[in-house]
Length: 203
Image 1: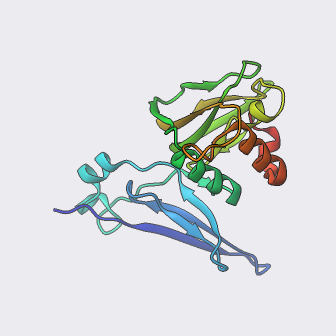
Image 2 (image 1 turned 90 degrees about the vertical axis):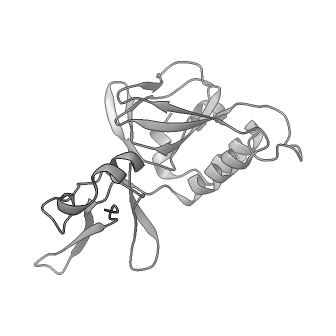
């Protein structure tokens, strides 16, 4: 039996006329994307598990049987992050990609920082001075503040699920035709010109 793909959306209409939509169920694969009425990406599922989808998402293990799977939903990345993620992955020096188990340390507050991270799959938690600031989902860019400011991490980042992370090394000097996108100067220019609000407290 072939596995099934589904997305369960719930719309709540308040007595005051307010409307709230959310993704309350989804198959484990592929990633699910939620758009608002204007076509803007607003949220996505934080994890995509091909193996578990192939093994379990059919028959009774679907909404047409007796089960639904509650997804881990994260806020969509910003337009700037989408631009940066494309530059990181397409640069001449391809980033290294690694898998991290749940509860692994990605960066430590106060440590020197010379790498930029792109979260490809999973959910990260961000803490500063012992206080949790929030969560980041796929497409999030992490580590830019150490590159453009003090050179040290301003927050601690740990994995809240199993994660896949791409790592771009800090390279100084001007961009070249062979590697045009991921120089430190390019990162600084991009983030200083249009740094999103949520980055102000991120590492």
